[in-house]
Every structure is written in C-alpha cells, then in structure tokens.
Amino acid sequence: MIKPFLFLITYMSINYAFAAELPSNNNYWKKLLHYNADKSRVISNEFFISQNGNINPAEELKTTVNLLKGDKGNIIACNYPARYLWIRKSLPDIPFYNLKQCPELVLFMDQFQKDRIDIVFASEFLNVPSSSFGHIMLVFHDDTQPYLTANTIHFAAETNNENFFRYAFNGINGDFNGYFLRSLFFKKKYEYNILEQRYLHRYTLDFDKAKIKNLLYHLFELRKATFKYYFIKENCAYQIAILLDIAQGNPETINHGLYVLPIDVIKYHEKSIIKKEVSLPTVIKTKELIETMNKYEKMQFQSVISNKLDPNIVESDKVIESLINYYEYNFRRYNHIFDNYETVMSLKHTKSNLNHDIPEPLERDAPSKIGIGLYGDSRKNGIYLQYRPFLRDVYDIQKDTQQESELNLFNLDLIAYTDEIKIEELNIISIKSLSMRSKFFTPYSWMFFAGANRDNTENSLNFETEFGFGATTSISTAIVNYTLNSGIDVTENELYLKPELSLTLYISSNIKFGLSSSYKYYNDHHYIQSELFMTYRLSDLTIQTRYKSNNSDIDKKIIVMLNYYF
Image 1: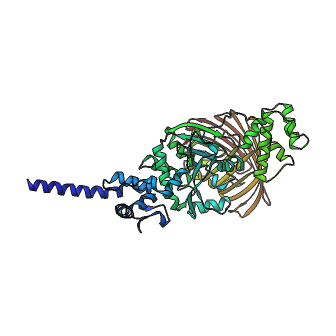
Image 2: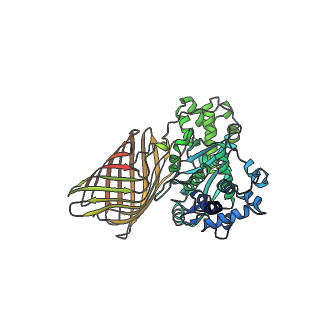
Image 3: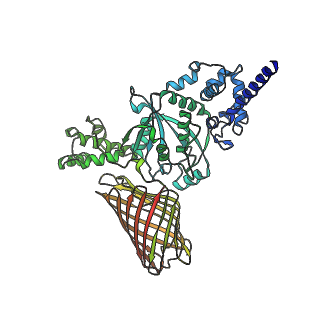
C-alpha cells in the first residue's frame, strides 16, 4: 500500500515540476516578451526582470515566478500585470494581488476609454516617407464621450525628418528606434486629414472589455520597451498585430513573408469587424462640396476667398463649410492666413453628410503580383514574365480621386525566347506620386526611378537614375499628368532631359486605359517613346495589354499579360 502511494506522490511531483517549467516554451509567453525565434525584439533592458530575459524566456519566467512568490510580489504584479495574470492562470500556487490597488497602473487605465477598440487605417501617401504603405493605429473609445477625445496607440520610428531615400535606407537597415506612442485622436485626425490629406478608415472590432483590458495591461508593460524599427517588416503593422494577438490570448500571429503591410493586419482581423466608417481629407471634402454648388454659390465661394464679399452674407451651409475647410487647410498646411480668416472660421453651419464613394481598402488588389503573357516585337516573339514583390504600379486599377501612384522595389520583367532569356526591366526602386490638382488645390507630382531598362535607341539594358517634378489634373474620370524629368544613363555615362505627358482614363471601376509619350534629350541624340495600355480586372486577376512604339532598333513592342495578385 505504501509503495503505490509513494509512486503516486513521486509521479505527481514530477508532473508538477514539468508543468511549472512548461510555460517558458509557450508561444504566448514568448509573445508577451516579444520574441522572434530565440531573441526578443525589445532592446531595452528595463522591459525584462532577469538579466538574460531578452534571450532566455525560461530564465525570465523563473525569475518572475520567484519574485511573485516573495516579498516583492505585489511590485512585480503591479508593473507587469499582463504577465502576472497569465502566469497565475498557468501556475496554481501564485499569490493573488489586487491590481486595482496599484496606483500607477490604475492611473494609466483611467486615462483610456475601454468599451470599444478600433483599428484606424490612414491611407497611403507617398509625399510623406513614413506613409508610403499607409499607417494603422488603435483607438480606445466608448459611446459616452466624443470620439475626438479617445486615446490612440500607434507604433512609430524615432526619426529626424529624413527624406524618403534616407528614411527607406535607415528603415530597411533597422537604424531607427521604435516605440509605442499615445495621443488623442483629434491630434491624429488633424495630422492625417488636414496636414497630409489622407483618408482615415475606422474599423470597430468585436473585442469585449476583458480583451481590451488585457491589451491595456500589456501596453502598460510596454512603457519601458524600445524596439528596432524596420520599414518593411517589423513596422507599425507588425507591432499592432502582436498587440491584438496578445489581447485575444492568441499565441500565433499574422503570417508574413518579405513584408507586413497595414492593410494586411486589417484583413487578418476582417471577421472581427462589426462597423466601418471613413473620415475624408479636407481637400476631398471641399472639392466634392464645390462640385455640388450652383453657379451663384461658386461665385460666393470665390468672392469670399478674394476678399470681395463679406463672409457674413453667405447663407449656404455648403459654401460656409467649404470655406472653413479651405481656410483651415491653407493655414495648417502652408501657414497662409487670409485677411478674413477669423470671420470665416466663426461662421455657423450645419455639416454636410457626403455620400463619398471611395474604394474600400479591404477590396483592393493584393500588393504582390506575378504575370505571364505573350510578347512580340519587330524581330521575334517570346513569353513575357513579371514579378513584383510589392506594392503597386501605374498599370494597376487605382480608382481613387486623390492620388494615382507607383511604388515598387525590385520589380523584374523578363522575356523568354526559344534560345535565350533577357531582362526587359529591373526596377530597384520606382516611385510616382501623382497628386490631383484642382482650381483651389495645387500639389506637385514627382517621380524617382533607379534601375535598368531598354528605353534607349540601342534597346540595350542600361542602368539609369531619374528624378522629376510635374503636375496632375483630374477631369471627371480622366487624369492628365505632366512631368519634367532629368536623369543619367549610368551605363553610357550620359545625362538626359525627359519631358513626359500621360493620360489615364477609367472607363469603369474595373477598366483602366492609359497612354503616354516621352522625349529623352541627350547631348547628341534623342529617344522618343509612346505607350498605350489597357487593364481589365477580374477579381484577383487582371488582363493587361501594352503597346510601345519608339525610335530604337526595335521600334514596336506588344505585350499581352495575365497578372495574378497575391
């Protein structure tokens, strides 16, 4: 009788010891420590309790458990509430500590509205380097307080206003430190809707109060955390995804390959979305209001701006709202104050309820593309192959009233003949920011290219760098762009000047037609090229036809491709 009893005690002791060690290898414990494989992404020692907590999750757990059982248990629980609650749930002999009696934690929690949580997506905008892929943040709110006063949490790099190329290099190389930052929503709305003129898409998740509290407990722990910021991968999107996983008690995370984009996180949580809203940029809002005005209202709008009409005479709500938006934009964006600024800003009106039909980010094409098709020129035929790791090019369907754009890295186009394979184009980096101009808003467009192509009279693969400025105007569904570019053919060591004119027309939301013409001026010769293209979208596929004519040895090229987005 004694031997079976001793065996049972021994067996239970071994299993208890094993159970006590098991959580250190738990994916959720590692997630609380922000581990990536065998090392934490957190680079600040203050985030950890043990000396080797950043490389040894078992040691961090053991040290935490021992302290929780000792005289400093209450201090540890108050400083690491999310870890404490998970450990107490996982191990049976951890003492109870009342987190409501932790002064600093209670003060932190009281600063947040805690009924609901939104993911807010700020649309892409190439004129701001850190906004090239868009940006996401979390907004904590409830129904009893104004949304503008809600707290937002987002992850950002500590930068020094680097230009796009320096920012991209430092971001890819991990040379920035990153932090979770908190601010009130009205500040972010001002930054994105007014200064940067970006859409704010709000997605309310079905998280209950317990999940929201768990997320806030972990955010309290992260006040001592510093990360390395990576532009493409461990960026704002990836870090917000980790937070949402921790809130849900999810040990797994979003699947990612070469990159993680903000929109990927929203798609990952798409089934949890219970409400969608969008906040328009002031330029778009004003433009749409002006388009609905009659001739008399447009005349009043123009007369007030030119200071020929007393703003107090204006009675139309849409004119007043347009004036306020226009004046605020010019003041905030360009520090320009109209003489009648104070009068206009004091006008009372009823806000419009615009039914703005813009593309839903969740319905956009996926960022990666692979294409295969037929190629023919004046000499021979072949198979055309293209791979674009991310993000978009001017041939994609981008039906958006604010900006047509191109941003891709390491885009590769190949032509396979029966006897050889040739590189047609290699975009190391290609950027086009085509911001729409109107009568009252006149942003500039710009482009940059570095890579190799055959846009020369010899049709040879030459490396080039090119930079240009211009203007883009939209008329109904047509977009006209003009840029004056200058560049250098690195292979031939030749400088050139290149004016370029393009027209894009959306026949429908799924059909895009375009034509362009460019003229390269070299020192002793020139290169002329015209292109005509049409893109037709079918779900995750597009059919694309391109025709190019030029004054090179191969004067005509025809490409018909089937592209798959993933």
